[in-house]
Length: 486
Length: 112
Image (cartoon, each protein chain N blue to C red):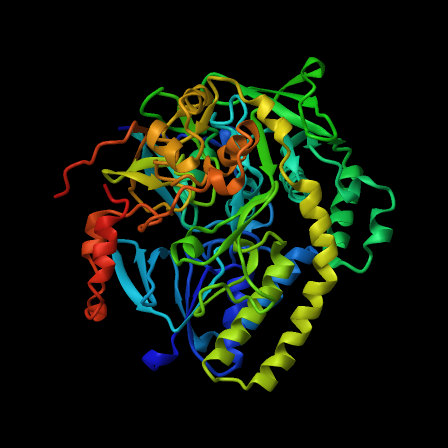
């Protein structure tokens, strides 16, 4: 590989895989960096190689994943995979610092595709830190990779299609699902849902799941939410209530409490933007969704050598992530001259068409699942809003009473966001909280600035730089020393 | 220590239909031998015994367990082979692995 043609892809989910496929199709080579031991991302996560899973009818999502991975395997000789590898930093001189199981290194990218995916929106409520409270995505991937029940009796609460499919996954492995609580009134609460969206395959998936839920007598309640998880050392009971249809304010005098040992929560997703932030790409705020990276139809960010695809730039799910990944892959090779502008244009056509067909449905889902401020009524003064540093809402209030009005100051005042998760599980919700309670704009509230290393790493690992990467620029080290290591 | 395996069949949360697991291994969790299989994460091997609390926090000494399951929340960290802050949801079991509940920030055991 010539140094001047390096294409690096961060993230081995649907977007990153599809990008790599298109790069290879153009005759170029690329390096795919992924945090997991095997590619697939969260949605197409593969079972461990040590497990033998018997062939059984696959659902549409699994079939999609299988065919994408098969396509990938055909061109795999053009793709170098760095698995179990985290990216810690990106610098303006095109250097990317990575760390993997006891060692680290720097890789140079002429074209960088960031497809870092999303993670679940944190929604604090009393008891949300108890063992037995898990995210829907976490539960789904745990079940399909480990074949272990995370509990026996479950309540699933949140918003969006994933709470439905997770409830089905739980039911299938013998976990009793007491109820699925959808906070909103999504399009699928309508009896004519499928008729309206028949040409969108994702809508067909949702309809299929709804049918299965009904068939198994699992109640799905619209405009309901979890209020509290209780238990001494782990969850033993869960309280839920209806919510106001407009702002999701819980109707507290109508609560129901049930014995349950598993509370599964999923209030939509937050794009993983710390890498695009670190790289200096421009971001925008979307009410109820949060910050995402600004990009054009060909996945180009405001930084000329960086493309962004999939949920790390805008939440749209696996199907669109794949299409976006394809576009990014083609664009990267076009920029480096592997394909002509004419040929590239042809290759953009199909994915662009798919994205445009989906756009309306995506917007409707995003609108229906957007976070509403009534949920903040669930948080009590003593409820932790920062899981890592154990910061309670009362401390946030104390800070705002002293005039703190932005996330960065709140971090300095309370330590919120200073722990190992680096603000991922507090900043999105508390950012919205400050925005609503203090009536400040998202820009004024700001964000917690990510600094390299964006994932915790020991100094020992950084000292173990891969030997072949000797000519790394010393700026990288300076950036680390100036960054958040202390 | 007796060869008593915690997570006996009646308290095993594993699903056994449609799946054949890897080679059986033994890990030591807080001094007790626990049955596990190659390909399982440490978190899965522990949850399979019905236990969900994996560590206690620094300030309020509260129990925490597997939360995000994808390696971003750091709530499932434990001390593995003397090294604290290891994400059990991302770490695969190995024969003879020594796993300990992490208290607060955890202590490094001196490496030989």
